[in-house]
Amino acid sequence: MGRRAGVKSRRVVLIGFGAIASDIAAALLAASEPGYALGVLLRPDSPSRPRVPDSCTALASLDEVEAYAPDLVIEAAGHAAVRDSVPGCLALGLPVLISSIGALHGEALLADLVATARKGGGRLLLASGALGGLDYVRAVRHATQLDLRYESRKPPAAWSAELQRLGHDPATLSQPVTLFSGTAREAAALYPQNLNVAAALALAGPGFEATGVDVVCDPAATGNMHVVTASSEFGTMALTIANRPSPANPKSSWIVAQALLAAVEQHFSPVVML
Ligand SMILES: NC(=O)c1ccc[n+]([C@@H]2O[C@H](COP(=O)([O-])OP(=O)(O)OC[C@H]3O[C@@H](n4cnc5c(N)ncnc54)[C@H](O)[C@@H]3O)[C@@H](O)[C@H]2O)c1
Image 1 (cartoon, rainbow, N blue to C red):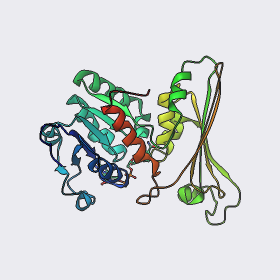
Image 2: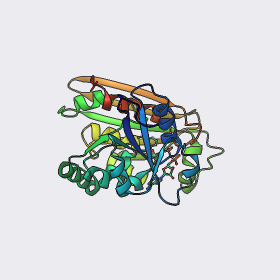
Image 3: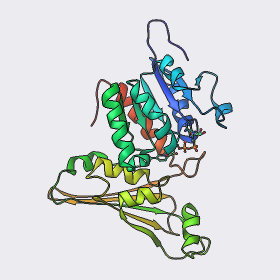
Image 4: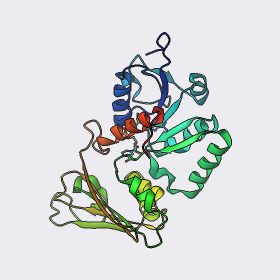
């Protein structure tokens, strides 16, 4: 999709083209005026290349991203892409919306990205992803009596390897098993690919050390469940979300692409809900 006469379409670059990015691309390409022009940044050997629609511009390097001059970059590629591609985009002064928030549990990477964004004029935008309620968590983050806890509850299939390591058979598990209980810092380091949600909560709230995390494997769980509880001098919140898996990638929740699309809408909207 190119620029229409007299109407400037929004230019977006997607990093990665898996389950989440392809849902985003389909929605943006179908959007009405002013519409979107899409570039897709992939690694040279990416197996996703054949699935990129012809109407998208394939980009192979940061130089090509710069020449494409996007209004927004969206990372939906994984933790390695946050380390490899996001710093360069921020240095170009671009706003970058990231989904792989778990990558930010490393203090050095986060500090680096913030410094690069400050220097280059870019902006790191963190998607709410599979979780909700982050507006409330942001509001209570400075409460003096804050107790913030997150519980991830998933069926045994999601944690087969971990269960087997602990001596459980995932196929015959009859009771819930708590795999982990500790801080968001420890959880993100132990299960980096699984705990984007814990990282998002910690960053919205009081930080990785002050956010409690429980990881529970439950044979009765039908989907990926997230339970967040917050208690402070301002009151209490209890939130339960049960996400359906993406049809294209059972490891990701289907809602994540919709959350990123909502963030794209906000990015370009004259009215922003914070
Ligand atoms: N915040 C959340 O709640 C949340 C939830 C689910 C997933 N995620 C994140 O979204 C990411 C994408 O999820 P998905 O379901 O689309 O995964 P997927 O495996 O279907 O697709 C990943 C895509 O990224 C590409 N890729 C991998 N590394 C890359 C790199 N360094 N540079 C460019 N492209 C690269 C792959 O080739 C593939 O096209 C996950 O890795 C996860 O970190 C976040």
